[in-house]
Amino acid sequence: MFSYDVLVIGSGIGGLCAAARLSELGYKVAVFEHHIRPGGYATNFSRKGKYSFDVSLHGIASLDEGEICYDVFSKCGIMDRITPLKKDHPYTVVWEGKKIDIPQNPEQYLTVLKEMFPHEKEGISNLFQDLYSFNKEMIFLKDSTIPKEEKQQLFPIKAKLFMQWSQMTTEEVMKQYVRDEEFISFFTLLWPYYGLPPRTLSSHYFFVPWLGYHLDGTYYVKGGAQAIADALAEVIEEKGGKVYLRQEVTEIIVENNKAIGIKTKKGEIFKGKWIVSNASPQMTFSKLIGETYVDPSYRKEFEKLEIGPSVTQLYIGLKEDPSKYNLVDEDILFVKEKDLSKDYDYLHNGNYEKANFGITNYYKLDPELSPNGKPVIVLAFIDFIENWPENKEDYQLKKEEVTNYFLEQLEAHYPGITSSIEVLELGTPRTMQKYTKNPAGAVYGFAQTVEQSGLLRLERKTPLDQLSLVGAWTRPGGGYQGAAVSGASEANRIHKYLKQMISS
Ligand SMILES: Cc1cc2nc3c(=O)[nH]c(=O)nc-3n(C[C@H](O)[C@H](O)[C@H](O)COP(=O)(O)OP(=O)(O)OC[C@H]3O[C@@H](n4cnc5c(N)ncnc54)[C@H](O)[C@@H]3O)c2cc1C
Image: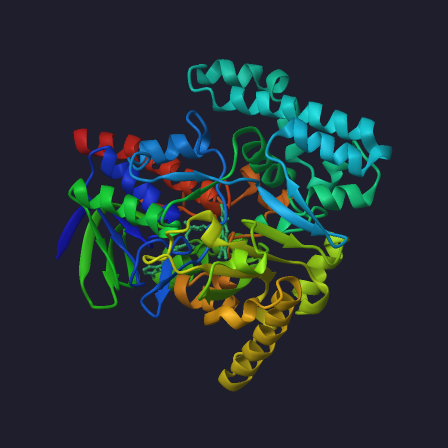
């Protein structure tokens, strides 16, 4: 039997940040990952030895000094181990056949918007004014120099918009300023980054990253998602911990309502003073912990929550620089459907021909992502596991059909580019589910609706002592920032308990 201070199940960003933060705080931590590499969705894979594909990272905000991700990654010990690469633009859109680079600078963006929607000039200015106020509120909320009690007292005055908007969808907030549905769509085209269209997406999940993208900038990281995961794993091991790969956890050992250890598929037992699960709550409480140990009402509570969407990605390795075919942008959204609720419905029903999609040009983001500089691009869209047959033959047929359709799309936008393809692989929601064990291959955990966000999102604290949940399914939510914050914040909470436990 092996023993560590803390055992972490799963090496997604949430699990790794919890583990790295606890390692930085002096604990001996072991992480268990069933896959061959750490990272969960934050990983790369290679093909033909020369193409490296980033599975998930398009952009992270708040990597500037003093901002949330910078702060969390610093506390996890990796800010000096990764190299953020600032993107030229948060994203580019192809709207009514015209290419528009969305400026990072908010004043430049405001000008673009007013030119495009002159009849909404005033409303747009008011929206931007309130976004600046919202930013001030966020600065107040992040300020750790203000004592907790004082912050609570000041909260209703200093965080008015934050409070109001926490109860509203993105569309409801927008409609306070503008009427033109087309403007609302244009402004919220990035909805796939959060998994729900503006009509149902909690406004915080849209506007908090918006501030990051436009006030600070959007970043890619040199070496891709894997560079972040590897840096976190490095910290854990340098501090005396261990990241066990190809080690699936099959059981959480519970005694007297306390989680005290884990059992792996290989039959090994590890003991720990605290267990952190970065596996989904469904897996944690339905597979890893025996039914008798958990109050059924707790399980029922989260079983009725809505699960967020997954993604399909077409990974493409090219022989030549994509700019040869006029693909010169970093992240491009192709808009076929302006009504974003319809867009979501098309994707939900697998009606891909009518829906919007995006292309990420990783060669532009980081020309050295592939070890020998081989260009990779990825075509992506929100998708749902129900669209993909379980039967192997039907699944393969559908994969071919969808691949061919999107190759036609690619060729239509960048004539000649398909002749340069050397590697082609489609990852579907079933692929996402297989590699991360997330139900339905969900990429942001529970759907980020108003009812499932903020304090209404699943707590990291669980009914069992010494067991926490971290990652996209829990507070504050999905994405790199959400998962990282959940891991590092939970590590700080665990530290308080462990300090007491060890000293008593
Ligand atoms: C295509 C795509 C694009 C994305 N783009 C962005 C983006 O640009 N910006 C952004 O912020 N976010 C993006 N995201 C979302 C972001 O990647 C995720 O929300 C985030 O990485 C989830 O982290 P997590 O901590 O919840 O863990 P996950 O990534 O869900 O990892 C959980 C880990 O636990 C492991 N595990 C589960 N059960 C067990 C077990 N029993 N034993 C051992 N290991 C187990 C899994 O193997 C996995 O490694 C994207 C996601 C995808 C898929």
